[in-house]
Amino acid sequence: MATAVTAPGGYPSRHLAGFSGLLQIDGYAGYRRLTLPDRRGGSPLVLAHSWAHARREIIKATPKAGSPVAEEVLRRIAQLYGIEKEIRGRPAAERLATRQQRSRPLVEELGVWIHAQRERLSRKSVMGVALGYLVNHWDGLRVFLDDGRVEMDSNPVENLIRPLALTRKNALFAGHDEGARSWARLASLIGTCKLNGVEPFAYMKATLEAIAAGHPQSRIDELLPWNFPATAEAAA
Image (tube, helix red, strand yellow):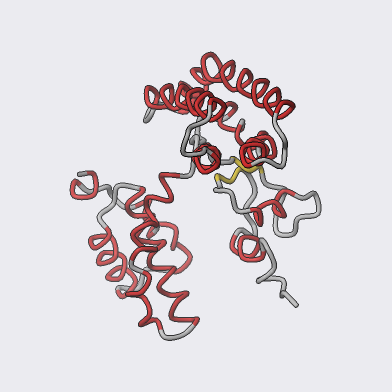
């Protein structure tokens, strides 16, 4: 019998206890329990689904001979990514305005087109199942249209953790569960440094020195990566 933690969504529920708001995710179904009205540990979350994962489902369903349906879906998604490329790094308010004006009509047209194709294709066919993935996640795929802070996909985060996944065998020295948890905390801290333009070694050195010098626990927020000066090395 699965425990509360090992059941689908158990780890996200524990990790995100106390967090409310919007969560950018991949296609893991376990996150859905965080959207339920009776969620414990916070208000129901809004899930922003990844267009990269939706596109991947279409590509996987495309036969070697090609598919007009797949080509059209991928063409329309590419239009959305083209707009995102133009506004990448812009303020959230500007991104939102552009998405409302240019991306929203494209998404609405794509939604109508996908539903039309589902009526034409067998829903049990490989492409029918792939289109069903988009339909089932449609609300989450549309979240980026109403919030300029949200990305179209979870690729930025996945790119950060990919080196960790590729080198996970090197972490076998953890030896036991608590060692693995410590390694995960450090890896998360280093990833947060990189997200905030902070050189990890400089941050770790300064933080450990501050703790050794008696930095009060009541002011621990001052030692978090986003409160550390950005460094030229990290920016490069």
